[in-house]
Image (cartoon, rainbow, N blue to C red; front, side, top):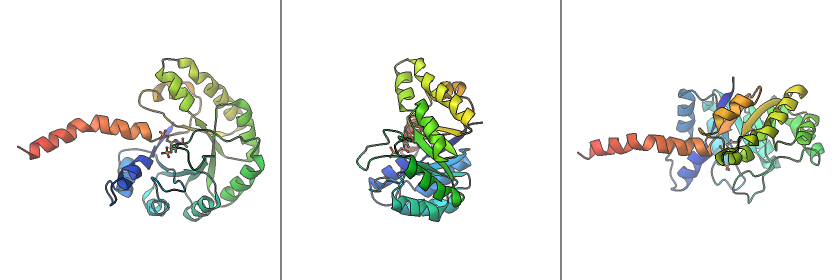
Length: 237
Ligand SMILES: CC(=O)[C@@H](O)[C@H](O)COP(=O)(O)O
Ligand SMILES: NCC(=O)COP(=O)(O)O
């Protein structure tokens, strides 16, 4: 079975755009779990443009499914994750000024750093995953870091699929087969959507978890708008 972890960054973006507490991030996390999601993902960034560091603590007692915290392991992030102790930490090498995550780790160049930081999380009982491009030598490098899992960065697959190119899945299948053979758990994420998720799931062996945010929240708006318009119209009769 592949678990669905809902990334709620976008709910925090909407909240922050207006001040106040609407929509409420904690209530949203409660609801996605009530509706069947098997995990909640957040990706606090140093500028706190969506998830704030305080949200990370507020969510902890509310996430009874898998709590996945993603981020660049700068010291402030590492200390917070060690304190909160989520189910899983996903390490992402994102630059502070990046609009969103745009690359996986170079697991060979950053091996020493990753070995140390992964050891620290694992010693504290936190499962680790590292965000990687679908490149075989990066998967081998990931194995050498001691990480429990990898998260395949799926933007290239999603782009190709949206252009009708189903061959974009090929490097992901090769990396999944290698990861399985090496005993690395396999997660995936970025730009996965209702449109492209089924084909990905059907072709990737032993996919443990996907984290989905941007498309899932957008789809919720598209698919929910008719209901809400009708509710308003009823109030205005
Ligand atoms: C790690 C990853 O794939 C990202 O998709 C990320 O979690 C989303 O972050 P933003 O919501 O900041 O774009
Ligand atoms: N790890 C990927 C994630 O959490 C969500 O990415 P996206 O669906 O917002 O692109």
